[in-house]
Amino acid sequence: MKTYVVGNWKMHFDINQSSVYLHKICRRLTARRGVAVAVAPSFMALQPLALQMARHQHQGIYLCAQNVATKDEGAYTGEVSAQQLRGVVQYCIVGHSERRHIFGETNKDVRAKVAQCRKNRITPILCVGETAGERDFGETRDVLRDQVLSGVSEVAKDEIDKIIIAYEPVWAISSTGEAQLASPDEVAKNVRFIRDLLEQTYGEEAKSTPILYGGSVNATNAGGYLTVPGVNGLLIGGASLILDEFCDIVEVAKRVSK
Ligand code: PGA
Image (cartoon, rainbow, N blue to C red; front, side, top):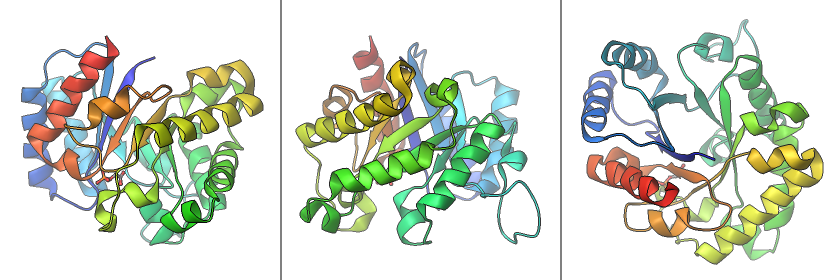
């Protein structure tokens, strides 16, 4: 399986800054067989960056959306559909904890978004993870079970390897202010739990579903997380905005994936 390195730029960088930053990343990254690198700029920058990549033939760097609508089309002011994203992005983050907790996305919304992505040949990166409170109350497994099984419930068995799961404990995400670092043991345990859930539901096919880790990943700890058994890549927020950090993480991924 490939190793994934996905940078979520969140609501940072305007179009010009995104373009310059992508250019710098492309210049820095050398051949990286076995590693898939994706960046998720704002909706505004997706189309210009797609054109930029096509023009410069930046192979092996993919574009990812940060969100998508639950519906095909219609009177949904401010939404962007998977139909509209089709052909522009290869990946789409779905159900990020900021969407769930700040914008009130429910498991039902997340399920519809995953289905929209699949229908339009976009690989959803389904984010799941417990909050600090849920962890303290021993509810981590219940939360993961709900979020994972509900999120993938409209995915056909032969498509389960065409979605990506990102395990991101909310208490480990840097922007939450009081982020703690998740220990590799805890990540291993929860990633194993997610893999078992998928295999119980989908059988052998789920062995090929990539599972990423996210939460305060940087160039220093990336190797530790990438060598956790069952982790197939990283979803990176804050550190993906810093050229050296992001490119160093890709280098680590290259070494680990060998
Ligand atoms: P972080 O964000 O790497 O800044 O913790 C991860 C994420 O929100 O996906």
